[in-house]
Every structure is written in structure tokens, then in C-alpha cells.
Length: 230
Image 1: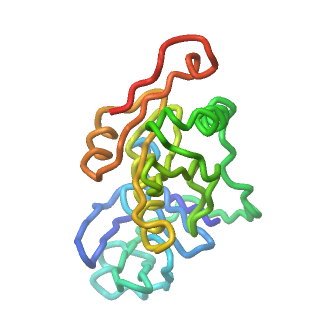
Image 2: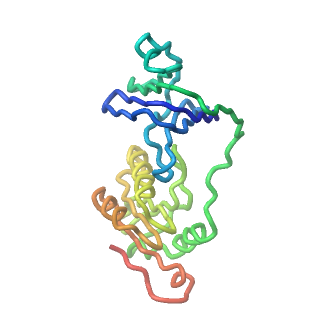
Image 3: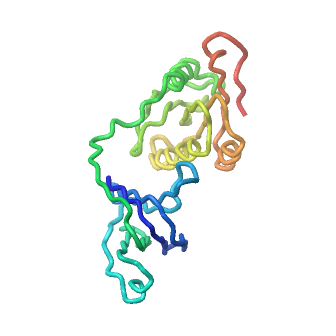
């Protein structure tokens, strides 16, 4: 990974257009070809980015750019859509490269992993007549936590989180899109299960036809009341 701290402006052109005026930013260039543009704020989300597959090529600044103080420019082009992201650099403050090696992937924390185990054992909480097919059902982009079947035999994909947020709904949406392309599984229903589900995540899930399931961790371990399915 290459990390560049630079005084720069950024322009995105393609299905939409966006402009980031000149400011100091962190540019992350990954080995998969992607680039992310970060500021010192806005939490974890980049201000702009280009997802792989894409390529980066240096551009020679023209006379007007040189007169404006631009010393270097990059053009990042998406291979499939031809969308372009142009980074115009006025000054490079720091430039470093690091070999991060092979990432072992996300390891679920103890509570989330235990919730998956408990729900697999208590699959009827998802609905009467539901049966477990398997845990960690692999899709081309990663494993969905639980694959089950309802009373009619239809497939049900269940994604489990400690805290249900929009990112989790997006993750399940991607799983469902791929699983519904498989004629053996389709149609596949989605269930988003968590100890707590944020209102925005619930709204997005319901808009996409995904059911929300609240899980009471203590109760599932035999300590209190039942969870609620909406």
C-alpha cells in the first residue's frame, strides 16, 4: 500500500461528477488498483474513491496547470465503466509505501460468533417451520452467516451483527443479489439479525424486502424473554 499526504484537488467524471477543491488530504493507493481520498474528519468514509478494477497513470501537467502550481497529476480509470478520477497535486508532504502481506480476513468477535451458533441451534426463532441448511454458507464475495429454509422450502439468508447498521444491510444485499442468481437457491429471502438495529438500517432493510430480527443474547442463552421478529 502507498500512502501519500498531499495538498491536492480531486475531480471525478463518469456516471456522476464531483469536485474536491484544493486541500491537504491522505491518498491511499492499494495493490488492487483502488484509490481512496481521505480528510481529517468524516469518520472512516473516504471523500471520494475508485474501486477496482482500475488503473492509475501519471499525467503531464499542461501550462495552465503548472501556472496554477500543480506539480503532478494522476488519472485513475475504471476498467469497466471508464469513469475517471483525476488527482491534481500541488505539493507532496509525505509519500511512503508498505507491504502489508496477506490479510487473514475478518474474525468475528466472541459475542457475534456465539449469536450465530445460538441462532443456528434455535433456527425456529426466524420463523415457524424453518430448518438449518448450514452456517457460513460461502458466496463468491464471502460467507453469509446462516443459510436456512422456511416452512415452504424456500431459501433464507441470515446475516448476524451485534449492532445492525446500514453497512450490514448493504452486505446482506450483496449476498442476496449473488445468491438469487443461483437457480438452485432462488428465490432467496433475507433476514438481518442483530442485538440492536439502527432506525436507518431498519428502514433500508424493509425498503429492500429484508426482514429484521432482534436477538436477545442473554435470553438465547436461557436467561430472559424471547426476541421479536418484525
